[in-house]
Image 1 (cartoon, one colour):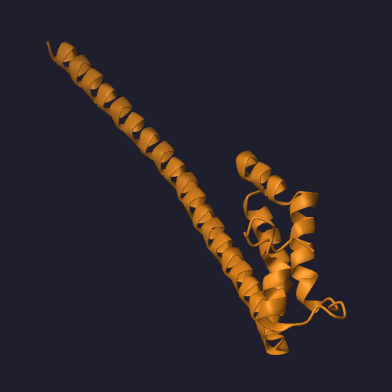
Image 2 (tube, helix red, strand yellow):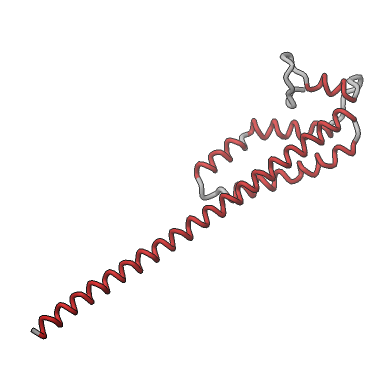
Length: 158
């Protein structure tokens, strides 16, 4: 009777020990998964911040370019030149942040095609290029420069 009771007690304690070990193993695995997900969320926040910074730089460059074209005042080139000097570094940081994500890398490649870069470079260099004689300056010049046949603005039309 005592031996049977000891065996039952040992069986109950063994089952309890295995259940406790199972819960501990599950908790450790869940904690590791949480850390991995937390790292992914942190990287996502960094990517979003870099994208916001790139957007701000593009808007600053566009605003400076527009101001220079309308007023012919070189003071507007300062924010333009500052923004365009930082864009490539920001895009390189975005590339490094997305190196572990195939879909994001694909989008980065699409955004960095020669056609896109060429259009960006053409627009980025426009304010600093010499204007052709006889084409004027100021609002009328800017309007003629940016207007297309159907009335929409196009920064890439020469």
